Image: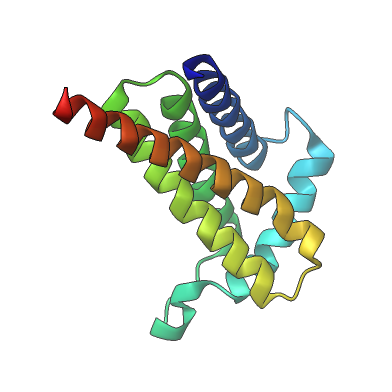
Length: 139
């Protein structure tokens, strides 16, 4: 079973690394990068901290999310245990933000599915990690 969780962690980490890289550069896919640019204009309009007077510039917002996903994805895949746990938490926050944004924009539920699945897998990895730490305390 440990092999399954390791595979999930590696694949999820690589997925987030790729998603982050797609936001940062158009060298991988110019079409996807351009589509992300236009989406982040909408995302900036419904940014959760907008109510507090902060609205990010869309390109900077996309780059910030891209860097967070890239670094956290790499750390989730190959980092030491403590950094994997921190990156898991950070990516959970990013996915909750993504789901919130898509729901506020009233996007079709199919648009929320990837973020929801990723959040579910991240939480599964987190719960499994918590269970392993609890078990080791009693042994």
